[in-house]
Amino acid sequence: MFGISYWFLPLFAGCVWLGTLLAMLGTWLAKGSPHYGWMQTSMHIAYISDIGATSWGQPLFIAGSAVAVVVFDVAFISERWLRHKGRLAKNYNKTEKALSICAIIFAIIGAAGLILLTIFDTKTYPSVHDAMLVVAGYIISAIFICAEYQRLGIHYREHRILRASFWIKLTFIFVELALAIAFGVESDRSVYNRAAVLEWTISLIYIFYIWSFIIDFLPATHTKHKNDRFGAPVRAGDDEMAMNTQDHGNNMGGPVYTGGGHQPDSSSYDSEQPMAEMGRYQPPQGHVPASRNF
Image 1 (cartoon, helix red, strand yellow):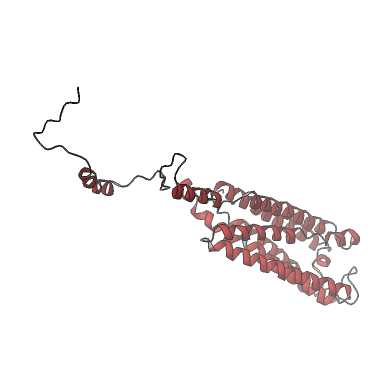
Image 2 (tube, rainbow, N blue to C red; image 1 turned 90 degrees about the vertical axis):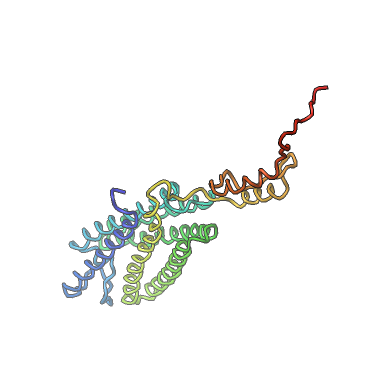
């Protein structure tokens, strides 16, 4: 794609999100960790959204978040396209394709929720901003992509990269869900400093989820040419039908061998000729066969 491998998409998206968070946190610390008027009185650690509501933090928050999530959504769409083209292991059935499409849809919903969260800041729109916090599009998207990879790993057991990607994404789901629950509990208990630490932790771990898609795109670096691409998967029903045909013969009762249209090489073909000649009747020299005309 434009001379750049597809694994660059999640790498770039993760780096942009990491740079955005570090720039916001670093600038807040450089300013002396100020306490803003829209923060709780007991807070000493600012939420990401508190920094994102400042005059200098909001443009950075909007731009960084928008670029990161849009590029990440492009990575989701590219993964679907690459599987369709055979650049990655093709989906085995329609269920896997449906799971992939659902993952894309919820990733787009998550991206829209995050962009709206940066626009409707907590200082000016506190109620709308809180409503945006319940958008868990990327968590749901991760569940769908995890389910797709689990099924792919069953059908393509020889591709260990699928199993590795599945376990990484499954770990992300459990860790992020646990941290999100802890964040909600601490916020409800008004332990805002601890909740702020959890929010920053959740956002930083999200980067590793984005980067986990790098390994998913690695096989595509070897399938640029059509001859190197993944073929259509052999389904169990087709395999079973072929085996039954070979065991029991065709409809006419004759044997059928499922070796396909493979032609032997010349050496093996020539080595079979003496046996063929030995099995063929040859009349003795000088012998005139009897006439068959009566």
